[in-house]
Amino acid sequence: MGKVYIAGPFSKPRLKKSLKEMIKIVSNHYGESILYIPMDYKVLGDFQKIDGTWNLSNAEWAKNVYENDIKHLNESDIVFVLNVGLYRTAGTVWEAGYAKGKGIPVIAYIPEWAKKNDMSLMLMNSYDGYIDKDGYIHKFTEEELLKFNQK
Image (cartoon, rainbow, N blue to C red; front, side, top):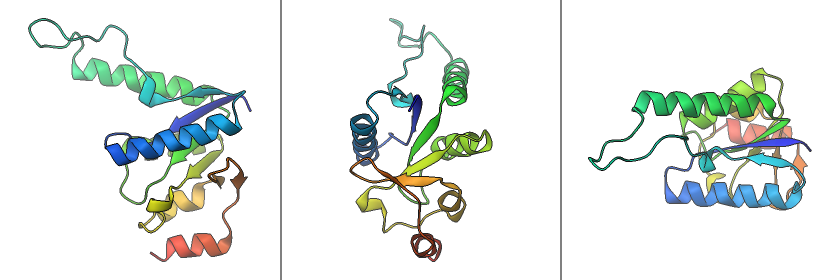
């Protein structure tokens, strides 16, 4: 499949667990692909000094992360997005929108626990499909989109 970008929130234990679940599904089904997982990225040159301060300022660190993610998004053939409902991180939503704007297919993964949550109609209608727990990609049916859009 080429290069795969994995976008998803990981700031809370439940989100991180679901993101790892999605990574496992994608890895098992697309093992020959090169996966880029922002959660695993470490900023070079950033370390905590003896006095407790960090080597890089927050602005330097954030710029490094942003530029690295852009580089990998631009090199990706497909983007998988962990969608846990309307209230997810802005970074994940931005990555999905950026990829869509570049013409890169964006595929959602929605864990079972999140399917009862309110969804963003903008995201739901912009996905090129979704990946199931067995790693197969499907198109959303009109009925599925209608169900999500009525919440």
